[in-house]
Image (cartoon, rainbow over all chains, first blue to last red; front, side, top):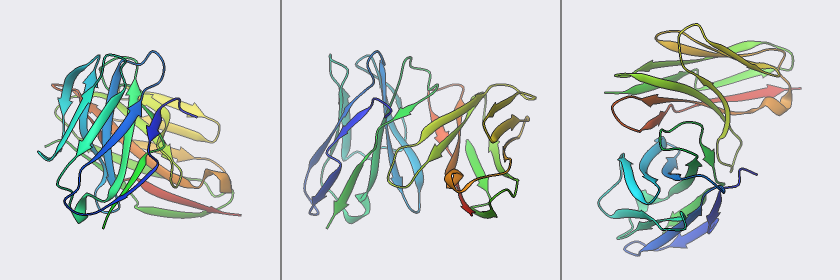
Amino acid sequence: DSGVTQTPKHLITATGQRVTLRCSPRSGDLSVYWYQQSLDQGLQFLIQYYNGEERAKGNILERFSAQQFPDLHSELNLSSLELGDSALYFCASSVGGEGEKLFFGSGTQLSVL
Amino acid sequence: EDQVTQSPEALRLQEGESSSLNCSYTVSGLRGLFWYRQDPGKGPEFLFTLYSAGEEKEKERLKATLTKKESFLHITAPKPEDSATYLCAVRVSGGFKTIFGAGTRLFVKA
């Protein structure tokens, strides 16, 4: 158990809908990272937050947004969903903000029908 | 553009048959190279961090090495429980991104 909690584990929704994925980092970790994993794209970095502030941005679509709250949990919001957004979404956390050793949650499997 | 390439895509070994996985990288500035293990349906699990050419790290049957252009993950006398996808990642300077390779799927048969 990595100590990173992601909910829900599975999400099935329809095209055009909006969903929210939630992540609680390990106790003491200040950084949260979001990754998308699909069969053809591998693990793609979306965005990082450090102590409530956006730290780095990767290949995140404009339809997606994220935030980190004062209690350090994070949410990833996906809107106007398309079939191609179906993937496994991982949250990871680390103590600092330098992208060092990451601890991953077990992921949220999103299926857009 | 920063890039991480892993080979082979898949590797099938007999139990006890040693081999190596390759990770080659092209980055603007390396701030660390990481190896992770991922089991089906689970998140990646950290294995090693390497920072400079010539550095080596070992853990049980696994040994990671680093040169200026690539890293190897050597698996000695693998067991079926070593079957997993092994991911290589690099942390690049000038930003705070960790970029992952596509991974090598390892199958070890008893």
